[in-house]
Length: 123
Image 1 (spheres, rainbow, N blue to C red):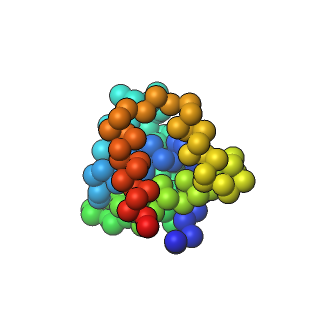
Image 2: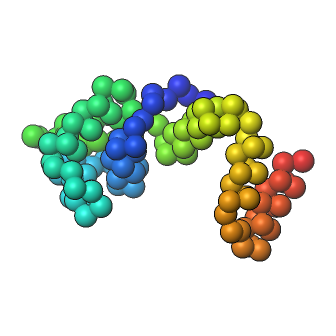
């Protein structure tokens, strides 16, 4: 697994836009986030700057516009975040996390069938 820098919750929101539409400009990111957040354009640009400093995104310059693209794919980042969460909250025991999740959530028969299939395919 690549060593991906820690991404904050706010940075995740920016990354979701970049993963969904890349490359994209700061203005495109701002426009995508304006309905789901109350962030000012300056806030979004600060988040982009932080992601650049962390080397999570890169950019290409076309004229006076910067187009941002991810340096890690979404699945890699989600996998690392999941691993970090399990270590922090469940002392690394994925079983405890799964049991907690299953006990606290109403799973449909389809959900249960999918989980069984995943577990059976691991053999």
